[in-house]
Length: 71
Image (tube, helix red, strand yellow):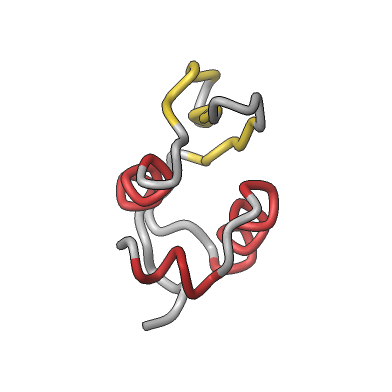
């Protein structure tokens, strides 16, 4: 499986399994935060571009393999 063609809701569900929860929404972006205070914005677009998803995972400090396991 690749990082292509994932919608925003699937990304938020997967990030929640890593301890992220919705903090707030500002326009078309949903801001997630974990208990350590790390903040990750997720655009409310379907699908999310692969390059954007790579940046989200980098900010969340989650490997691609771990993310794909939790989809």
